[in-house]
Image (tube, rainbow, N blue to C red; front, top):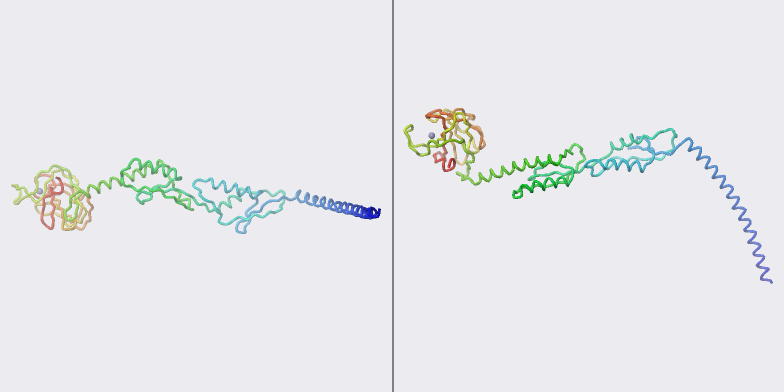
Length: 340
Ligand SMILES: [Zn+2]
């Protein structure tokens, strides 16, 4: 009995406490509701007159307003990244976005903001350059295009020693982006390859020629009929023939046999109009009876340059070239080297 009474006393206290708690909770909710309603009113008034918007500024200068910051930046980035040859897109100056409540009537100008941000973009472009023997020849847009060009050219000239390489290049200067269409690049490189092969073959031919004191006589001066060989006697001259006579039409261009310097280009008695060219190492070539001479003493010439034209000046019975090769002043048989 005593225990039960005690318990009842305790139960009464709990009952009273519960009641008080309920009362206060109710009161709190009452004020809370009032606060919520009040806040709602304030928000409603704000939203009727104002709206939230992002003000964008670059380097502290306000450039305009956008509605949705994340979507705006993402769209802009995607648009730029889809551009041709674009590798990376960076911003020189990061735009700042500030959330503001502005007059509802204020309109966003996203296009204008976008163009302002785009002015600020640092775009790195990527392209591929094809080089032939270290000479950069053509630019194309993609690695696939570059490989297509290189593989096709290599297939056509598999046995030649040509170093065709692909270089990955980057630039921030859009003007350097002068890439070519695959077919154009291919045709251009093919032309260059042909030129190089021709040069290599010409060099191989010259290398195979015998040399006089290290001088290669690479070019035949004219084509024509041999009318008098070296060393023969003839009634029209007092001594044995010091050169080789090749007949050709008057005016036929005469090419110099090797690189050298003209040492003489004048009328000279029985030789008529005579051109002498010094090739170095004591090697000289003479071109006699010419009609016109296109060089003078001191002219530097390259093998194959036209130095005169065939004529019949001096002791001559018809248009022909009298060709002499002299080594340290002594004439030798030209047919040891040319017109063999
Ligand atoms: Zn002669």
